Image 1 (cartoon, rainbow, N blue to C red):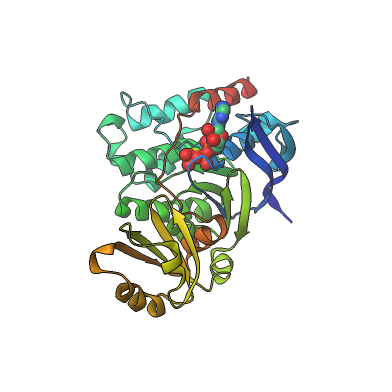
Image 2 (cartoon, rainbow, N blue to C red):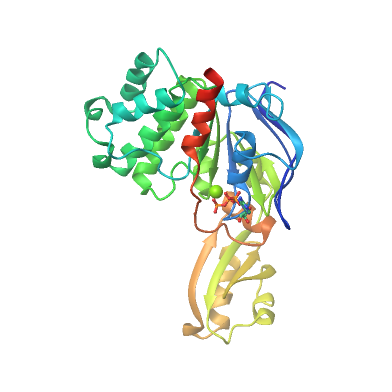
Length: 326
Ligand SMILES: Nc1ncnc2c1ncn2[C@@H]1O[C@H](COP(=O)(O)OP(=O)(O)OP(=O)(O)O)[C@@H](O)[C@H]1O
Ligand SMILES: [Mg+2]
C-alpha cells in the first residue's frame, strides 16, 4: 500500500496514563483521514507523535515516507500542521504572518506560493490588514495557508473547525477538500464533529481512551449499525427496569443523568415510551439514526462530547524546520 502515514503499535505513556495505546494505522497518499474521539481520547497526542513533537514510548511510524524516529527532520520538512489553537500573530498583517512563517522555516522562493495561497483562500484583498481584524473564518484560512507555505505532502489539522459556526464550518470543508484535491495533499484531521468526518473523510478511525475501537469508510462504519438510539432525559420515576421492558428496547445504558436506549426502531418504541410514563417524567428525547454518531455510541457506550483543546507549541514545531534548513 502506498501510505502517506503508517503506524504500528504506536504508544505514548504519560506516567500511569496510556494516552495512545498500540495504534496501527495507514493513511493512503491523497486521502483524507479522520480521527474521531471525545476529549482526552488521544487525538492530539497521535498528531504530536506523527509530527515529531513528542517521542513515542513504543512502536513505530513513517510519515511522507520517512521514519519518525530516525528521520524526524525529513518528516518535518514534508508535513504541515494546523494546530487546534489560534497561532496567528494578530499584530501582523496576513502577508507578514506568511513572511514570519517563511522566516521561521528559512524558506526561499516562498512569495509566489504565498500569493497563490492568498488567492485560493480569498484573502488577497485583506493581506495588508492586521490579522487581528480578520473574522474567525478568515483566521482559520490564514492558519491553513501558513501550514501549506512550504508545500508539504501531508497536513495535520487538529480540530480545524472547532468553535466555528455551521456556515463557516461548511465553507472550510470545501476548502479542505480543495487543499486535498487541488494541491494533492494528504490530510489527517481530528474532530469531535461526526458530520465533519462524514462530509470530508474517506477513512475514519474512532479512538476512545487511546485505542482505535473502529475504522473504515464512513459508509462501512454506518452499515455496521442497524439500530436507532433514543437519548432520554427523565424524572426520577423512570427506572432501568421499566425502560428495558418497553417494546423494541434491546439495551439500556446510562450517560450521566441521561439514558440511552438501543432500539430496533425508534418508531416502535416511542409511542410506548410516552404511554408508559406520566407526561412530565420524560423531559427530553432525541433520536440517533444510524450515523457515525450512533456507531460511536454503540462501540464506546457513550456520546461523543464537546470539543476542547490544549495550547500547542506551534513556533517550536516550525523552528525545528528552520534548524533543519541551516
Ligand atoms: N504532556 C502530557 N502529560 C501528561 N498527560 C498528557 C499530556 N498530554 C496529553 N496528556 C493526556 O493524554 C490524554 C490524551 O490527550 P489528548 O490531548 O491527546 O486528547 P485529545 O483526544 O486531543 O482530546 P481533546 O479532544 O480534548 O483535544 C489525556 O488524558 C491528556 O490529559
Ligand atoms: Mg486534542
